[in-house]
Figure 1 (cartoon, rainbow, N blue to C red):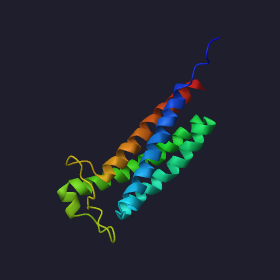
Figure 2: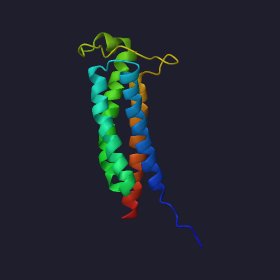
Figure 3: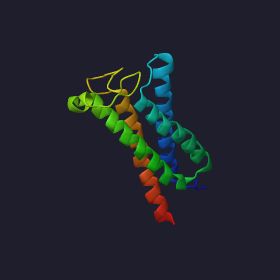
Figure 4: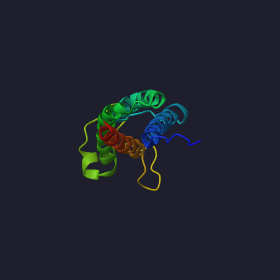
Length: 145
């Protein structure tokens, strides 16, 4: 008896969901366990990431590949915020001219692993993984129709 072939989009969808879950719990770890207070840009990145964890989780269960278009848009928006946030942390000209974020400065770096890995870079990595996998799923879904 031949085993039915699994759709590769399922694995990509799961990878997207796993990246969003890891990012969500990572941000909660930094704020709730390590007690790092998020700045305004961190909150905007969370606003983009947390719904992705729920939306992609439901999509994994329902095998809903059409959701990839929406997750592409949301992850692209989050990636743009992460790029800006990382830029004001690492590019001195941008950091010096950045607008005030509020009580916690957006130019602050709670972590700086290996001299370049900061929280916004971690978020950007997750957003890029979600965007690329969503793009592949979207293209494969369009081809299947």
